Image (cartoon, rainbow, N blue to C red):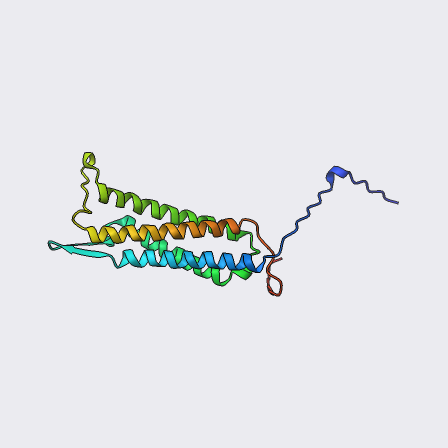
Amino acid sequence: MTMTMELESQVVVVETTTRAATAAHVRTTVALRLLAFAASLAAAVVIATNRQDRWGITVTFKMFAVWEAFVAINFACAAYALLTAVFVKKLVSKHWLHHMDQFTVNLQAASTAGAGAVGSIAMWGNEPSGWYAVCRLYRLYCDRGAVSLALAFVAFVALGVASSLSRFPRAPPAGTQIISNSS
């Protein structure tokens, strides 16, 4: 006869209850991600097509590395937002979604801040360091840049709110069949 003793302190019981995602939760998440998609895509397209000629000098986004990064990151954020919006019913229960959302929000914030800093110098200049305000000469180019920054900020806010909704994973909505090979 063998006797096994178990101490109460050795027993670990973990109970997790995952609430099911409601239709409103899914609709809100999809709407926010589609808004982020549209705003990021528009911000990237506005900058990528932004150019102004004056006195034989053409100014484009390719003259500034920060604007190139801004365009690339906004295209990437737009693709991410669209993909996650399309597959949100399957992704709503995934724990990694919040981490990817946070990563995307941080990328969007960094690119917007960098482009905004360069835009600020272009708008007001920094004479002690030798940077002069060029927006007086290239007003159309700068105005389009400001519109693009505003669109990128909208995308940042929409992705941020979507990220907060993904913080606590939910069970897929009722009637959704999830096929998974992971155990």
